Image 1 (spheres, rainbow, N blue to C red):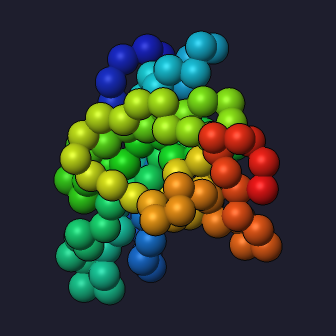
Image 2 (image 1 turned 180 degrees about the vertical axis):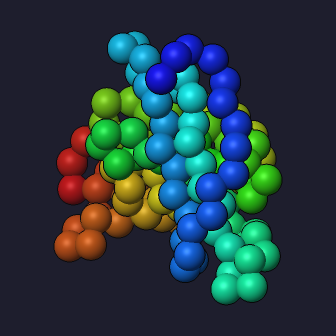
Length: 119
């Protein structure tokens, strides 16, 4: 594939949504390949898409139109270092649920405190 922007439409059967970022060597998103979810009648569903890094942390949230609604960056221990946009999701560091009431991540079998780096 050559450098540049390519757009087009590909039809899939079934439902769901997928996205696949193409990253540079410095982990910046070069291109984002996104397939939107449709119902069986072919209507687009109003479903946001979460983009994850290799650890499973949510790095961006796309709106149903495909635009970036929010971005997230984390410290090494999982604290939210910065975010942009107004959209939110409880799935943050390492794909874990963040409990805003306790400021801990729920890791299925235990809770994790990103401030101390321990559970």
